[in-house]
Length: 201
Image (tube, rainbow, N blue to C red; front, side, top):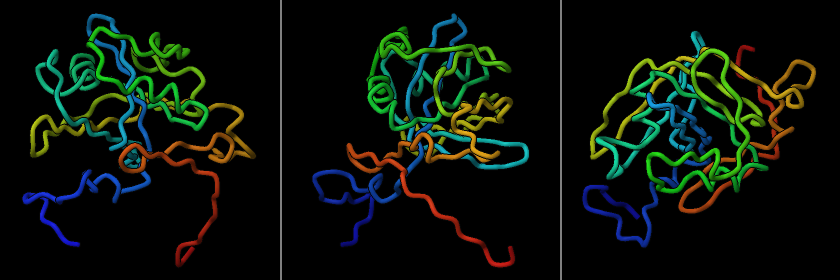
């Protein structure tokens, strides 16, 4: 099968996000200028640089109660900060509960019963029991082609690692089993890990 996206695929569901898998999930916590807090998962997320450490996530789609984009984007543009919370298998239901199209004044921490704690380097809450949290300051927002498509870039200013995930100085993903986004309504859990040496190492 071949199709041009501009012509449509003719399938019951769009295969695009099922092709690019598995994708890490950035569970983004933000705080608006009015102090209201938001927590939402984004699967167009990744790290993009080591020095200084930087991450990105993309927000797609609009909300009728926001001038552009979604609540996370609006809050970040107001305050200039956000926190990426790593999602583990044990948090899958809580994460999913925060993915709904709620009104902008909805606090998803409260809605899903998720414990929070203050970040250290930014004015924002983080998921208290996440395996890791990346506190970030906004560096730029890039508007993409299409309606309400934006990429948010941030520099990591603080890193929290849960103690039980550290084994002999290594952050061990098998200790918490990362949740990954597949296509459609599908998710995956990372359980099997192996190492490879690159040529020249």
